[in-house]
Length: 155
Image (cartoon, helix red, strand yellow):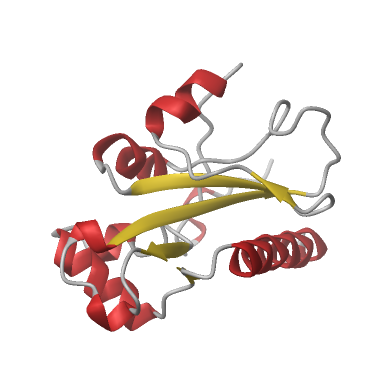
């Protein structure tokens, strides 16, 4: 599991690097910058701080951001698979928070990146994303809190 996480993190970094090379106005915000943006938008920062990977600036620098019209949230989805007719066949995880912001905000977009071929989509809004969906299912990821052995039984 640890090796898979390391591999996924490497793929994510490659995808981010590809976007940085191709979009000079793409930045990966610091934690403080994310907090500023979420506060500016009136969005719960504790719930949504990890819901986006970067920003596409519509102004010269982050310090010039004053309204939601000055930037676009970018959530990046990456794959190493070589796909014919990219992004057809792209398989990815998507959190409820990500889909919530994509549905509600007009400045939240998805970008799909194939790090193997170094190709990517243009930023997509909800309607563009929704048209591409072939199959969608909900899967919960659950972590138990630390708990005393109340529920351990042995027979």
